[in-house]
Image 1 (cartoon, rainbow, N blue to C red):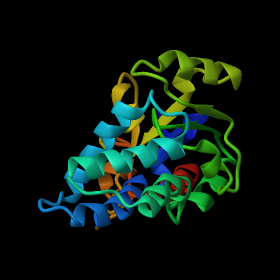
Image 2 (tube, rainbow, N blue to C red):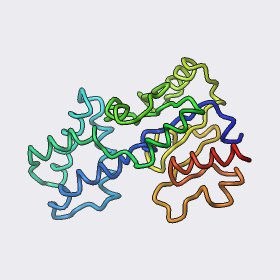
Image 3 (cartoon, helix red, strand yellow):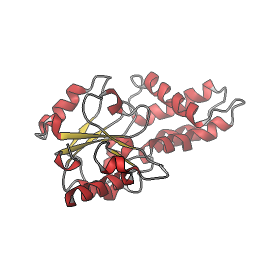
Length: 226
């Protein structure tokens, strides 16, 4: 279907928040202290692995990130600094929102119901919603690998059939949408030298790939004029 034919957008958290930047800015100084420092790819992999290990052991995102910082320091054979531990624990609530996201979701909310798909663990959703100009119509917080029932319940609550929602995922390795690939999906490939929505493959609607939410909003405007 054309982008204008959907009733709702299922936006994964990382289409709005630069989560990887937030993680790396917090962990690079720690890794630099190690005799064998990790590169960015290894740091992100370590973060994801530790998040899964700690997810059911701690009561809050702040506590999870604090313990994660200490656990990674131990793995790197570094004595963790307490102030740095506290800082990383609280920083997740203020990870940077992509510059285009507030304006784009404000525009898209005029045409779609907005459904937020949160990561499985370690995220304070309220800290994001307070910083955006619109409220989400539904929020899905996957509790395990099979989060289809949670998604179905959220869509039923806003009276949108599953076929009426366009999933919009990030390019992060653990994006929640990666485990649900049984229907059309749109991908944001940020930091591309050439915005994908300006390529013929995106404009001819054969692929739903854009460089940002702003580009997706632009594609919607283009489709309305077509």
